[in-house]
Image (cartoon, rainbow, N blue to C red; front, side, top):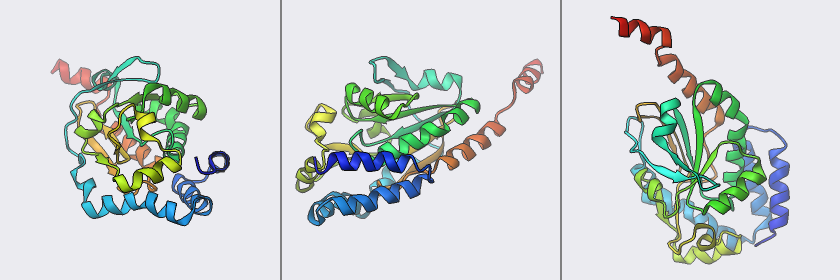
Length: 248
């Protein structure tokens, strides 16, 4: 791995700043530019340009789409189903690339900070990646994550969301050089990843917020999740109103 210790140290230092998420992402991008050889960096970042040119994000689920139910194992092997989560309230679903991705680490750390607010609003948060459960457990422990981190081995659920793409063969060596040995992390040789995406799903299974950006250095700001979730909560009838309606 290219200067892995230095990158990890810088990542932790950026997290400690408590800057807005996008500023943290910009900071790790700048520091990555300083640490990685120019030709290696160009190969890694070429994935972004390829996804933008291909229009891959246009195939992702949009607001108003209905999410089919799914069940995935969490980091400790326990099955977690979307239908069970929706029974208790809305769900924020975050697709991320893997524990090896510094941008994903920053995003999940930032979302952990707003988790108490998400729970107060009656919702839950889950993060999904194609990596094996043991890799997810390592990430949870390292970042002290207390929400469910699920393993979508083979990207079956991410495929339903229209997020999956294949890393070009010419770029795979560059990924391995930065520590992203996807076959080792994901347990298969497909070299497939999901585009990072964040979705807010209401209790009827309808997407109320969808954010998918082919540029993986850009992520949805936590404040926008809370705003949309607050608006959704205001739409929902109170228990008293539901009782009144049922009496009619």
